Image (tube, rainbow, N blue to C red):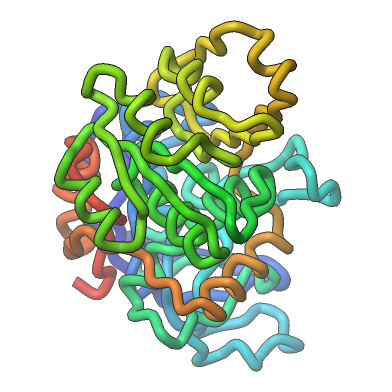
Length: 333
């Protein structure tokens, strides 16, 4: 099979022939139609990730057709279009992942290939309203956003919600989940163009965080937030606390701006705020997320599609940070 392979830190992905994966008990072989990039892939390439090993086939997201099953009890999967839960070995505690938890694409070879091996229990049928490219954009971002938004922040109908850093795959799906749940959603971004696109998708308003007093403008527009979903942390985190309503929740799944400054601690305890960390999600949450997507006909935003043979070009596009939505690979090209 052909695959885009990373052979070392800061090396370009190499598109070449490699050995097809061997199946373990209860695993299936998926012929991958489309896969999608995550910032995790770029961080691994730059050596900014734990547990590095080379060579490695990156890719945590994928959609394809099951062609082989290792356990004959599960032959009903053969020929079905599926997406794959990239959250491996979550463990028995639904609140937190186990010590041996890993994500598809490192250390286990991932989806930037013609075929991928994965446990049968991690499969879900592709939502019928999605194309292969749209479905490939769903698993990791959808799971991360669903847990952070619907489980940790527990967004409910009628609430006012802020999603920061709109334009990224997780942020967009978090916004879509909250809107589908009946919340009034506001967004922030460093790009006016991305704000306009988010508003066209149903956001009630947005503010460019590069502007002076952006948080005061958001506060004025929204009246404050019952829940916030953040991926940046950094110095601006204290502004999220300022904008939170009493009893509010702030869930964060990333820290692209580094350690957060929580501002005046009294604001957190006097407002009775919940500060909630969130990473990926458990198996039941993945099933709930797929069901929610099917119920509300949610469609992940695809920024662009590259041939698998141009995976390195796609990685550089992600590294530029200008995308609105997910960057997808066509694994058939």
